[in-house]
Image 1 (spheres, helix red, strand yellow):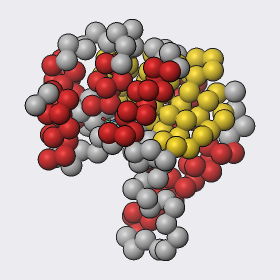
Image 2 (tube, rainbow, N blue to C red):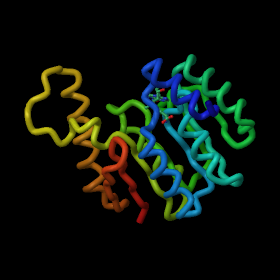
Image 3 (cartoon, rainbow, N blue to C red):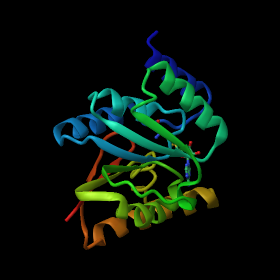
Image 4 (spheres, rainbow, N blue to C red):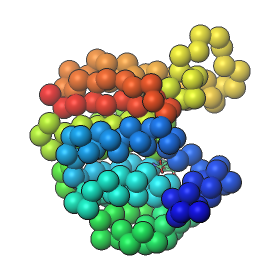
Length: 192
Ligand SMILES: C[S@@+](CC[C@H](N)C(=O)[O-])C[C@H]1O[C@@H](n2cnc3c(N)ncnc32)[C@H](O)[C@@H]1O
């Protein structure tokens, strides 16, 4: 089994929501086609998407933020297994409580789903000219498009937050957003 397959297996066995295969493939292709070299990721988990993105090209650099200590430690270990320590920097912090000065070609939002608007508003300032913000889980396992009521109150609230975020992106005058039905639904918002 390859190291990547081992990470995928670990994520499955431990219920860690890493990107779906189709989604990460779409994202890595997008990074390649658009010559993206600097990426800020919000929500590292165990480093799976950061590693996949960095493996696309030796010039790619990723800064990724994770607030859970166990996840952070696991990410550090996985990144080191790939010898990617110099190209992937993991910051152990709540992304909403820190300030980053650096500017990036791409920001990838994959942290707590209820906080997507806050992540977007805070980190849009870290984009380079014509940069792009990518967001995962725009379909939230098909629940966002469902019309019948969802029974769990907390799930319902989360689904509504994703709907609010989709509206926020569609109405945002500073970005043009396209939604793609790949993986769990990906939004690509290009700065005007
Ligand atoms: C969906 S997982 C990330 C998956 C990862 N991007 C991948 O595909 O391999 C979300 C992660 O974001 C972290 N997270 C949630 N809110 C955060 C915040 N405010 N700051 C930093 N990390 C956060 C969670 O602890 C969790 O590990």
